[in-house]
Length: 542
Ligand code: NAD
Image (cartoon, rainbow, N blue to C red; front, side, top):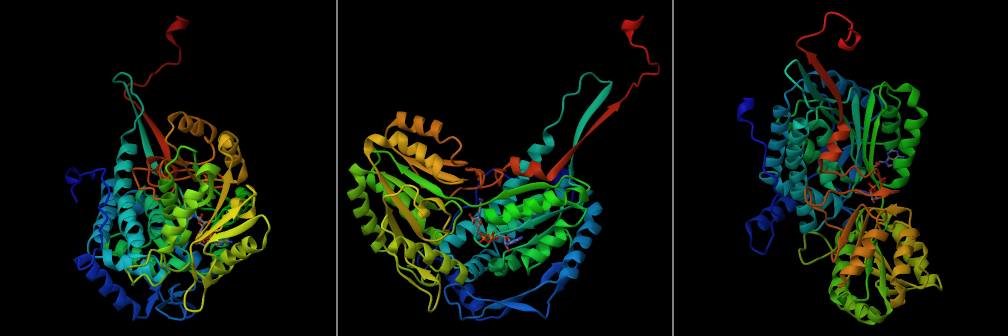
């Protein structure tokens, strides 16, 4: 590739397809889904230039049809993990010295493949393996992943352009944005195919080599991602994917002296465990490992007394129930003024009554199943708690059935206790809790919003009063890393709403932005003197 011909892409998002009845894209994805549903795929480990199919395997079952087997993934052992790290380190020098335009071209090619020939496949894999409706799959697996891959190239080129000043012609100052010296360990969650792809690709784009451990519940689409990277020409060994026991993989990675970074998205407890392990091993490492983690949330919607009730109820329905509430940004605690409560409840009942649940291949459904049995059981425990506690009642929903798939109907809990368990803890399912406040206490309510949960990921304030918006922005400054005014608190788009929260929600390194990419480089300043002095005394000494 000639570098002079390389063109940095435009800062533009991938267009979301509609999948309307009789459209070509709908026919394509239905055909692909049906064909994939009746295959039995085998997900290998991707280590160096090998694809290893282990004897020990685990089945992949669609959450909406859990007895069905659509494939299996490989379970790694400790030698696989050690070998994956070895392979990564072996190709490190070559990859680091690959001109950035060539690295970029590979990931842009991957974006092109996902936007085009792989679109139906990656969407269908996400529908089957993670139970997403076509719309949720499209905005995640296709569009968001394409956006990450493309826009990160733009951000990378901007980073490289940022250089120190040089005064006069006798010296030159240059920042070399070196990749980290060792390897980066990427650990990713089940709920976004795009996060799986991005956490390894973003660090690799900056010249790093990667050990990637996707979630057990995202292996189907993870395979598609690896196949795309291979087809795009990513040298084997730059991203090594292992699946299996997360503790085994993590302990080996975190006991390696060459660990230079952790790129994690998942739950808060797991992230804290990782951080503690790095702390205990700190004397082992050559570098201080960069630790980037985007974790749990307890995302809020606050309705000011001036808010339009239909805007509030729609923000609740979309914010809380899309993808069965399994978005880190999903609305899960809501504060509404007493004067509007009846109107909002009625509107919520009306909107939610038309929601149906089922397989993602039946396009009329707004919701499908939650990810696995553990998650189903955990969510049910919260619903039962609300049914049986005198401080709460089920306003809408509360039904569940796991006979065929892990289905939980959209559930609204009403509580009289603003600190009720379901107002504080992350449930990660289609359950939202409402607390009704006295209208005149809206300012005190904001203080409560700020102090109720350990998380600070997303939040929304709905109001038609400008002064109240200003007040909320000031008083909820640290309550959410992504703050929405008159909108739902979810649905961040790469490049438009850089995403991340603080407090127990993560390190807030804003995935899909320059801020994140900067974590994967360790700049070297190079000063060159074209006229070096030959004697030590300074002029003032004369
Ligand atoms: P999870 O924490 O269970 O798993 C995340 C990853 O960590 C998986 O690859 C898993 O195998 C691995 N893991 C699990 N236990 C481990 C251990 N003891 N040691 C090392 N690794 C371990 O999370 P999940 O259920 O896959 O995803 C849901 C969570 O992710 C929610 O808490 C959600 O809020 C969070 N999330 C956050 C963001 C964000 O941007 N803040 C985005 C998506 C998801």
